[in-house]
Length: 141
Image 1 (cartoon, rainbow, N blue to C red):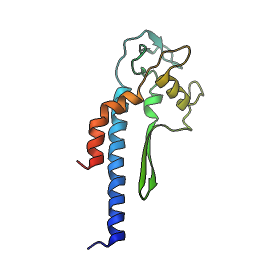
Image 2: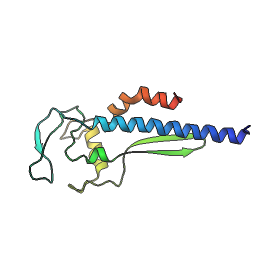
Image 3: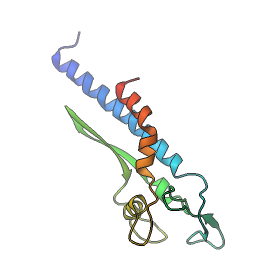
Image 4: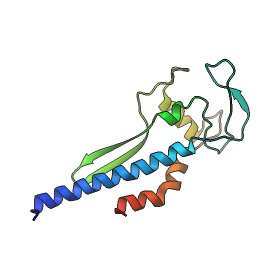
């Protein structure tokens, strides 16, 4: 039989496991959102000698010219005890090898847009679509 400390530890471990499952669901949906074809103009893939891709239209998830954004979607879990926080996004130290720019900055510009480009949201719509499955995971279902 578990004592009070053992019961608390078991609940904390269970909560951590549920959060991990929820983050996997969110990440998988995000990768799916960042895959597939788009409906915008056709451009040359940067750093290649003739490969092309179809860009996204405003409001549509960004197209994948090089796959860098999709490859750097990651998750982390912070905290212990009574508070567990799940994070999904782009690692801060990820650098696009073609442009030498931060992929995190690029991802933010795509999600929210800039003064020169309409938003191409990808993270928020992914998490919204995955919400029912995320909630099931958090409930342990």
